[in-house]
Length: 234
Image 1: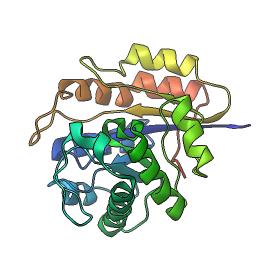
Image 2: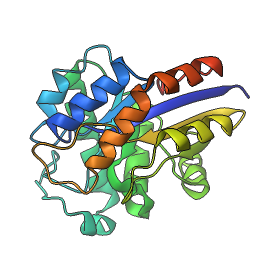
Image 3: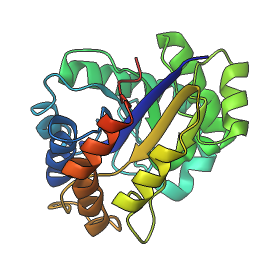
Image 4: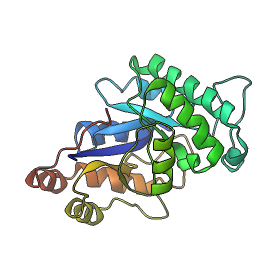
């Protein structure tokens, strides 16, 4: 099995400053893909910056309102109670919205806060993804197996996190490049951006650290020296 590498920036469309930072990380750095939130007050601002970018859907069931009817105000803690039929309808509605905003279909789907850890969310998303022929991010072996059992393609390995401290420092990224799996689709999730200007977030200063990491000349040079190529999901 040959190896494919994807470095995906989550949260495009979350906040104008975050979106601008993601664009910088893709146009001037080594980030190769992004996933877009399409039910935020700032989705249209992001779409205006999206020309030529590889964009998937960052399915958002944690914040703001649903696009499917009847309208539903999302609260992250309520995600486990969402029914599969609703998630399927909402995922399809958000995919349609993304295509309307950027003028092309999504490359793949992942989920804000990894809420597809909940069985009903995973089931509804898998149905929608299968209907559209789209791959879905898996974050662990159990999710990977569940998606494949449902006929949905997914990545073979996954790296990345977001917490109290910036995940992708230069040092951690250099180490990850050294230890990358040898085959399969390898996704590295990241959160570069400028500190949010409009939306409250617990991952603000950390985004700027990641943005610096992925645009640093020494990082780009190391990627080149290792003959690595980050690309789109599809």
